Every structure is written in C-alpha cells, then in structure tokens.
Image 1 (tube, one colour):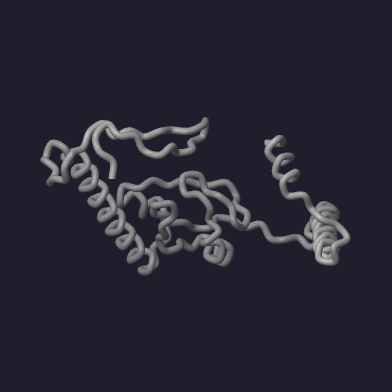
Image 2: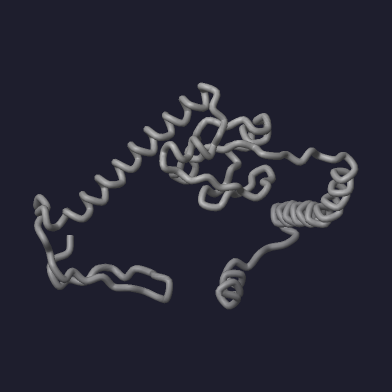
Amino acid sequence: MLTKEQFGTAIEVQNGYAVPQVVEIVAAHDAALDEVKGRVATDAKGEKAREMATENANKIRQQIEGGKTDLAALAQSVGGEIKTSEKLARSGVIPEFGSVSERDADIFTLPLGKAAAPVSLSGKTLVFAVKSRDEIKADEMAKALAALREEMLPMKRGRYFEAYIQEQQKKMKASGAISVNENMLTQLSAQIQ
C-alpha cells in the first residue's frame, strides 16, 4: 500500500507510460447526503422509469392478448409513440433499438397486421406489428447465390491455402528442414509496428 506523496509503478497507457502518485488519502466513511444526493435522485428516477415501463408493457401485453391490434391506440394509452421502420432483413437493425437478431423468429413468422407482445431491446420496450413482407423469389435468390459464391470462393481458397502453408511449415520445423530465428522475428515485428 502506498503512502501520501509516494509514487507507484509505471503503467502503460495509450501514448506512453503514466506514473501514479498518491496525492491524498481519505479514510473510509459513510457518505454524507450532499455527496450522494445527485446519484440517489438519478437512481430513484431510473428505478421509477423502469417500473413504469414494466407496468405499461404489461398493460399492452394484456390488451394484445385480449385481441386489440391498433398499435397507435395502444401506444397512446401508455404515452408511447408509434413509428414505422424501413423494411428489415434478418439480423437487421431498428434505429434506437439496435439489432433485432434475437427477435428474427418473431418478426419473420408473425402474421401480417398482428401485434407482437412487448419485448425489451437495448433497454427499451418495443411493441411491433409486421405491415408487409417481401416473399423470396426463387430466380432472384439463384442470381444472388451465384454472385455470393463468386465473392466467397477467393476468400475460401485463400484460407485453405494459408492453412496448407501453416501445416507445411509445422511439418518442416518438426523434421528440422527449416528453423525460425525468434530473435530476428521479434526485431522485425517491432520495426513494423
């Protein structure tokens, strides 16, 4: 443990090294109200907001289960807002909510116009309905598959070639046909960086 004015061990940081020094030692104590007032208020507001969001999500879930499908009316009843997103692909992203990959099954199998039960994404509650869905066209899929294959083939060849080279190097090192000068490799590596 360091004492006042004592220096610690140098620590590597982004632009070099930092050397910590103890400037002041404050004994452990119960915090005064003035020290934690802001944090307590923020925590209390956050907790109240989470409780209200859960309560509103439960209200909407009950209404959806009761057969209500008008999302605008449901949103208005809990002070929420309704937005329409662009069309999504699997594992797509909804602005403000992030990736929907964990909801793909719901989104892509939900009947058109039916409201889904509320879900939590990125700390926010989302209630959605699918307005339209583009069906997969076999001829377009075949064209896309051919283009994808052409794009991926060189990458796969490169990976296999790299794996082949590594395996050959391993065999050659084991048989003594080649050796690696680790010191020189370290020096060259340091010069590159």
